[in-house]
Image (cartoon, rainbow, N blue to C red; front, side, top):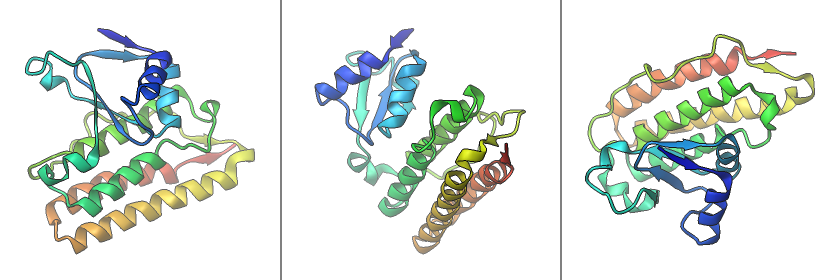
Length: 197
């Protein structure tokens, strides 16, 4: 298993192997340190776990995949892909410090981002699988000092989800729209259940 630290990520950014807002593809079992995960969130870099390619591609263990380079292979059209990427970026909650949510909740939001990335990169009819997303047993508790910020961010999430559903309806991708709708309803239930401190 490969250990990836914040220094590894910073080094890749300096060498222009990775960019803000890009996708970071892991082709072998890897462990990201908490500081590396935090750094990736701050730079809106999505982590993709692509372990099925490890036997086929032994040359590179880490690579960056740009959305625009693979758009033609996707089930979704470009506009929906871009809107899904924007939603994934919102789930980084860049306005909130690490202490705002527990580690369990940060992991939950990362799982949601991973689901979105997998959904966006499918080249065949998408399917819904909630098995890999574990909803924490504790509620999201929003500190009183961050209540207004939370109201804004949760509103932005709802708006972005509605926009994606609208784009999908316009692009006539009914199957994708149904799968996305089921996933987003589950996410919105959790977001709406947040409690104030």
